[in-house]
Length: 569
Image (cartoon, rainbow, N blue to C red; front, side):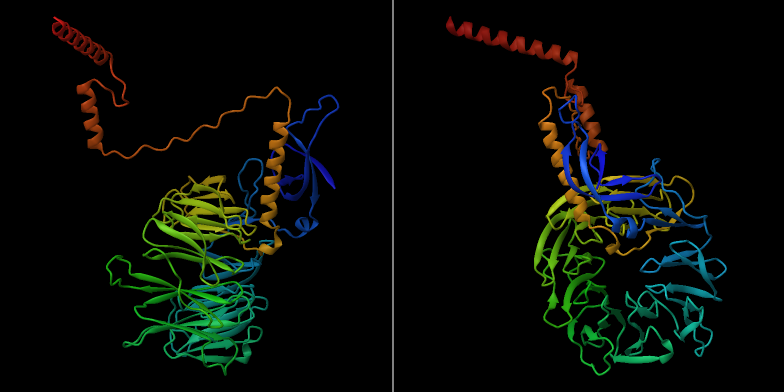
């Protein structure tokens, strides 16, 4: 048991160097001295150091890419100067991407070479020289690299799957072109336990450990246009069939790896459907489908019409999510526990509602200029924000205790993401969406700004992202919330039981609300009126106006006295 003196409410302490050590608070009591028995401002806090946190909790890192290349920064908490420090020399590249588990990342260079780096050591492990490559993708666990080349003949296998460890070609196939819905061609589950691809009128499955076996199973779906493999466990696959010649479109759920299972376990049909967005929950038990139509028959929206549907893999629920306001579905996100989901919807100001797995409303978060939802990796805190063409308002909610932790603003944000440990929220203004004022803002989990890093140089930030890590490798954020609350309570009690001489407490300045907008002609009219009446815009009268006012009052009093005298006579 280590004893340290805490001068402020903190749960992160430092040893020599910059690496933080996190402690969990066991108890706190006021510290006294032999000469002064009044409680001091510091506390003697008994802390237990978690050996698991020291050994397994990784440090946070941020990958930043601009027009010249990429560099990796150390993440918060930063050193004493409050600025991140680079961990490597800048490497020239045109695009970068981490694997889902964060063990590796790839960098596509200008000469067409694709380099694979180890995320821990930032050492180049392997490089692939692929001619005329137009797209590349790394698998979730960093086992395979998938590349696409422009085809010259139909017989050419222009999609290649490379084994990163051995640099061998694991599989090849032909694909005429790629779009957002058809790339990557071969898709893996998050744990790489399943792999599949979309073909004509069917979904084909492979053995991820041995692609030499070829197609192991297939699901026949006439007219299939898009599909999405469920998350861990990869037990199901969702397919979309658009409407054709008056027949409705549909979303169907099939079990994976069962060729004999030709019938879907769940199905939902609908008209006026141009495209869909799939959103599986963690646990692969439920699927949210945002159905988009290019035309809104009610003529209320220029951007078409959207509906939110919910399906379960066992077929017990198939229907619309009950939304209480008309308008588009701006964003929908499952929590990391997979037991609830949040939706921001409706014409501005948009509504925000949290539902359970049975589509029953659990919590209403009010209305506001919002279009973005970001769940904390620990599943307890939800950030509701309005980015893009909205002013950037953010509110942070503790869903468990159903209270708002704080709010802030991040204007011009293009991307936003929680850190893997769930303690920091990052927003970035990047090119090409925004060509000026590129920069990064980092906030605490309650919305308080940690550090405002706004780049003023001419270099344009193209991409900013956290290095992925498993949230299980970090402590629960609920321990942080409890320890901070307990320290605040103890500090309040000690200040109440202190000596009779109380130090003056600095008053918190009140934040003045901005004045209502007044058009220029209204301001000019107010100035003219003030000049005529002798009143300035703030409402105070000039000296001449006061003198004239007194004369008028005396004249009225004299006239009233004369009138009363004549009446008496």
